Length: 319
Image (cartoon, rainbow, N blue to C red; front, side):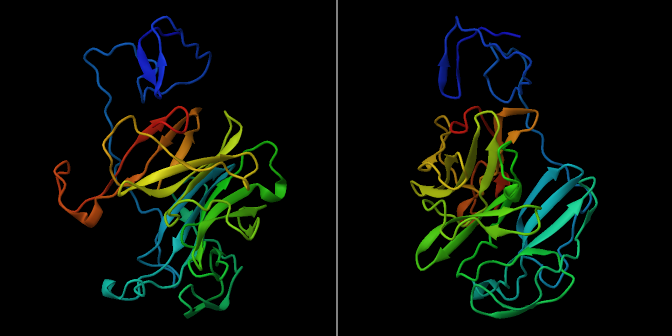
C-alpha cells in the first residue's frame, strides 16, 4: 500500500512526491498520516460503556482512596496492581484524611473475573509515611509496602513487563515509584523476577526532574529499541507531560515536554501512554484532563467535571 499527499506527519512535513511504504505493517487511522483527503467521512471517538464490576476494594487495607491501577497481559493471565488505601477522615483533615498506602495485587485469566491471591509477603506492624503505626493482617495480597521514606513509592507504583529481548531474567518486571524525602523528589527504579517479589535497582532515583506525584508510564519501545517513560511536570501554570528515554533503565535522557501541535494548553494529569500492541510504532495516550478547581468550563456540558482524552503519536514526542 502506498499514499501520495501533502500533509504533516507528527510535525514532520511530507511532500506531494513522497511515497510512504508501509509494507505489511498494520496502520491505524487515528491521524492524517496516510490520508490524502476525506470527503463525507469523519473520525468518531466512542465512549467506554459501563459493564460489570471487575474488582471490589473491600479489604481492611483498601477503601475509598484506592487508585492508579495498572493492568497488563502476561502470557496466560492478566496482572493488576493498584494503590490500596482507605479514607479515614474528612477532607478538612487533608492529608490526614488518608490511611496508609500499600500496593495491592490481583490477577485474572480472562480480564473479567479477578481474584486477590493470599501472598502473605508482609504482615505485622508497620509505620506509614506520616509516621503512624498500622497493622497488616495475614493472608493479604500486598506486593509492596514501601521503603519507609516520607512520600513513598507505594503512592504511584507502576509496574510493567519488560519485553526487551536482552532483559535479565531477574529484571523481567520493572516499575517506577516516587520518592520525596528531605526535598529529594524523583522516581525510583524497581525490578522483579516474577511480578510478585520487588526490590530496588538502586537507592537513588533515576528521574529527578518533574512533579512525580502522579502515575508515570513506562515501557520497552520495541520499534526503536529503548525504554520510554512519561511523567508529570508543570508548564506555564498547567499540568503537563515530560518524557525521557533510556537504553538500560537506569540512565535516562534529560526529560523534555511532549508537544500537541499547537493545541490550547489544558491540565493533563497521569500520562498513561503505551504502544498499540498490533502496531507498536504508534503510541496511544489516555491522560486525564483535569478541570482545575472543578469549576465550570464552557466546553463541558456538566459542572465540575474532569474527563479522559485520547492522543496518538508516531514518534513519542509529538501527539
